[in-house]
Picture 1: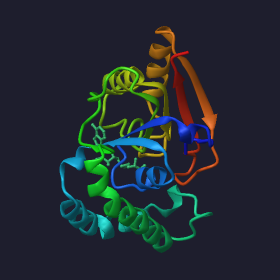
Picture 2: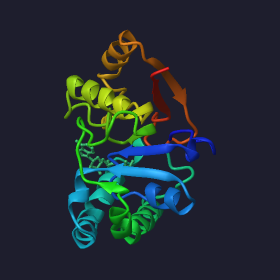
Picture 3: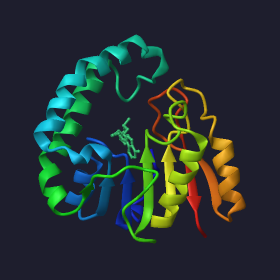
Length: 207
Ligand SMILES: C[S@@+](CC[C@H](N)C(=O)[O-])C[C@H]1O[C@@H](n2cnc3c(N)ncnc32)[C@H](O)[C@@H]1O
């Protein structure tokens, strides 16, 4: 999703809206420095586990219904996707309490971040900004990205599509605004594509 190189993985990374994903657990295990922020981290392991179990069938049913909106190549079926997701969430759940104690899982919500300026080298957002363009305004997107750029030197966002599979209606506005503030903007094709057409990330750098 983010075209992360070995040297990227040595940076101080902030994941915004990481949810119950395995990225933090995996990177921490291999010695990386990563902090994840999400409103669901206000809950404990049992509460998150229960919520995952409650929503599992609904999520898979929605995927089955909209099967043509996704690319079934590296993942071949809805059932396989379900198994991969559950394994990733289990990896998260096993790591969660320790990670919270170590300050790697922080409860919080964009567009505000509870971190000092320049605390991170790289801030990431996957499947949150742009994806919910019909629910979150352009002002929210701009404020959230500025806040991520305050906390980190570089920001990457994936994908650039909204839930309807169309390119986010906020993309032009936020990139123009950030360019006018002097940030360097790039749109880069990446190898990961699951949501059909969702194979680009936005990069924003302060220098
Ligand atoms: C679709 S999930 C994506 C999870 C993960 N990043 C991934 O790609 O699999 C969206 C996540 O955004 C989180 N979220 C919702 N509102 C948020 C906010 N204001 N700031 C940060 N994260 C938020 C949700 O709790 C959820 O975990």
